[in-house]
Length: 335
Image 1: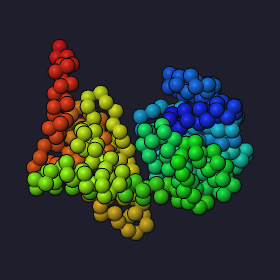
Image 2 (image 1 turned 180 degrees about the horizontal axis):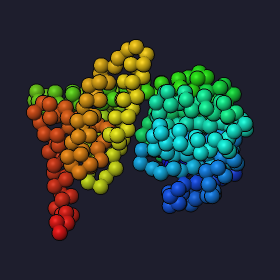
Image 3 (image 1 turned 120 degrees about the vertical axis):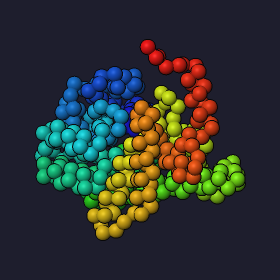
Image 4 (image 1 turned 90 degrees about the vertical axis):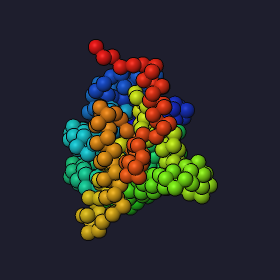
């Protein structure tokens, strides 16, 4: 996600004849694609932050740290809530008493956002939360939907930087950064809920003899692109990626996101019963992944669990045939 956003920003800067991004990554090769577009590598995170007025942070589930910068802009990728806190602690000396705007584009727990914002405020920096709706393919197209929350002047600057470059639209969520994270958490719960309903509907259609084809036609015609995309991920076998393939949206991210929703609801004195069902299905999909040698799974792999509960195999015939072809082409080394 962060790399895709950085590429789009670098292309935008180049097209406008503006100063290029500077980039830093603990794994130098991860900077290559950005450098090839004209970004300039930095020697350290602190060096990059010192040269920036606005620093964007994006936590990635599968990437070491990456920091991308131009004299007024930076983007960083890290792994989770703890990694976000870690990078904030590392760059804090370069951000103290400077009025720098630190921006987090990823999905972390609202309490993490609140704590980070408080720490930066005490240090004299400003925090703006801008979590993104959309997976990596959407980020590559520059079509993310971004929720923005933080002090008004800083949020205005961030909105101007991202709208039309990284995002198709921006939702302003007030001046408390944690409200943007809370909106993203609520949105992710709804996305997971739609996925659960589609999975159940597809299995219902298969078990009753109605047929998944006509159910998918109904979903496409009447329930919008999100539900239709979910149905395609299930019928095309994307829910269980082929061996060596990358998930469209990783199962572990879904576990994190739905977990954030459940805990946030509990803290507010309410519940997300549908979220609890989804979490159970995601956890069972994770167990199935472990049984398959920790094979990466898509977040839509809850479909396999719903299938199992209906007396069907976790793997559809399409998945079995696809994996069988892959096995015949490249048999495992049994030495």
